[in-house]
Length: 508
Image: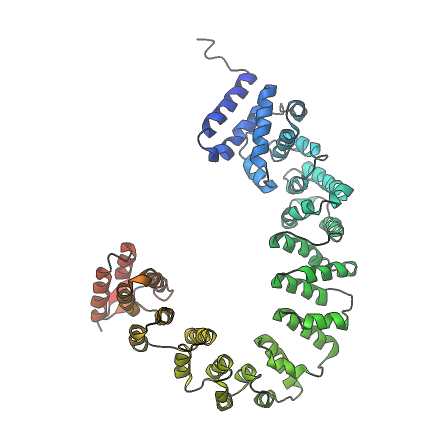
């Protein structure tokens, strides 16, 4: 009995922990992350060389291709343990990859002494920059200081500069330090110093062939520190970047947040960029430094409204008659005439409905032409797909068709795409009265019943009556309830009950 109740020695404890880990993860590999801290705690005991190799291999498989955020979340459930775990012993019996994995896991261990010991030992390993950087936000000041000194040495090492991918992939952790508070408490730490080291490394890279999110973080360094010495690097980023939003941010920084002048040739290049925001930035820069230039009025012919507005603003300041210019340069200026013209100008645009149907239709609707409703309806049936789509979008945003107008036209329509567009226009009448109509259409057009019911659900979630009682007449309530019960097979019962619950009979 005494033997059965004795406290097991450390070797037995390590064996029990390993066996439990193997038992729990044998049939469900998804439990490996949950039970890994239990396996790692066996290192606090006296595992045999075979057990050490097993733990090292499991650690290597666990964190393979994972980042420091994963490791930190993985290890936070570890037992705080004692100081008996000895990383030097791990090196004797584990494989190089296993030993490296154990050290990486140890840098996130709850025990501060073990965390610092592992951190110091990974300095000579490769691809560990992110695991050093994340410790700069550690809650122990001594570990933060150690991590900061290690990071500077690691980044200044020539071998790292030849491997730009490691630096680029570590950028999320640089941002983690920037937004954190703990690193800033160390007097010797300087975020500007870290940024400067990283910028010197990235400035030598040919280009950042990596994900958009990582490129964005790399660009942020140069946007925060737009020193003249990096102007060529920023310009290289601009010419190689394919994402319009990121290119715009870089151009904006190049134009406005730097001391170096922009040459006329480069400004001309920006003024012909495919992205309108970059063109507008270049126009504003030129206006600020050169004033109004010959040919500014041609910007009124731009398809981009912000550029047309920019040109009209500065031209009208100098007494330029924008409306007359637009009337004289039709049909190219139709959109500008719809922006700055009057309702009477619709007469000048009507002749171009045959040759420039899309632009003329948009201009007439914007000017509020009396025949806009009929013109949009006719254009929705145009054989030109672009014109028909433009008319449908105008019907969604600027023209209102009632139930009485849409319902007979939906039933008379034979073309499926146009019928679906007309059904979607019912959504603009977002009220409870449209629900029986949609249920009727879903039962009639079974091939598109799922799409109609999805539209039905969107209307039910409309903010105008999703969480409030809706007052209807007695006849409307009876009609809606009858339609809902007739749609038992195609309508979710919970949604049906919810609609019935929302209705309140108006007794007036």
